[in-house]
Amino acid sequence: TSHRDFIDNMPKTELHLHIEGSLEPELMFTLAKRNNISLPYGSVEEVRAAYQFTELQDFLDIYYQGMSVLITEQDFHDLTWAYLERIKADNVMHTEIFFDPQGHTERGIAFDTVVSGITRALAEGEQKLGITSRLILCFLRHLSEEAAFETLKDALRHKDKIIGVGLDSSELGHPPSKFERVFRAAREEGFLLVAHAGEEGPPEYVIEALDLLQVDRLDHGNRSLEDEALTRRLADMQIALTVCPLSNHKLAGVKDMRKHPIKTMLEKGLKATVNSDDPAYFGGYMNDNYHAIDEALGLTRDQIITLARNGIDASFTSEAEKQSMH
Ligand code: ADE
Ligand code: ZN
Image (cartoon, rainbow, N blue to C red):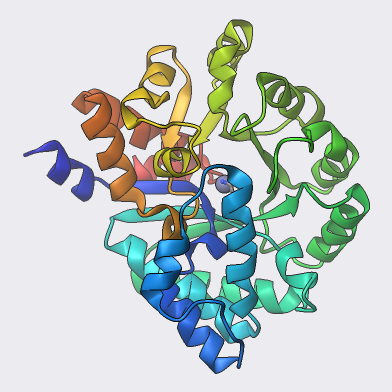
């Protein structure tokens, strides 16, 4: 079989997915209508045409505006359910999704509404689609440490549904050190820890995520390769990197997919995984992300399998669940 078919048929995990970033323009219009919200776009085509980004902040501005159509528990359910149905077609068997509660609580939506809608759909996904999942809360790093502590307090009521906390939004100027104390508190509460680092930010931010936040997994991590000692450390630790190829291309860190670092990461022994980040905004779900790197970088069959196996090993599941996925 061709690499294309092999990738499509291969069971996959997804470990870096912002659920609000899976909001397709069609659903955005449906929810806007349902909630009487006016959008600054006249059509689905106009929305897609607006998705042209030169850096992370361009995307984030549009992403926060897009999520304003999410109001009710049913909206969060429908968003999550649409994502699960879509990844079923890509043979994703397990997904660990991020959500940005502060993007909603800041607009007056209750934290519990958000969690309830998402987790109701995740439970249905397991029953009806056989897709297992975990939920990870992300703190918005452009907001204050105090706001993150408030959000952590909300999360304590839902410890049974939230496995970990992460850090996302505008990276430059908001280093991991800003959230050292929140992450320590989250760790003491038993949450697993991840953080976006080295997407736009320098290798020093990755080092802070390791040393100060003590993350269990790194989101992106691309710029780690600029620092040889750090690269060796990541290889020695076998800490997983949740790499997002199409996202890196759209947000211009990687202008040419033939220069995407994921193959180099594998060659240097880093535990890289493939993920879609914000698929509605970056033009592709899991299979598209695999195809993009395979076609641009000429991966071997073994490298494709290694990426998929890394995704299983790096998941926040039990050893027994990992065994059954392998
Ligand atoms: N929020 C959603 N997607 C993100 C990304 N790729 N980087 C930082 N924050 C995000
Ligand atoms: Zn991300």
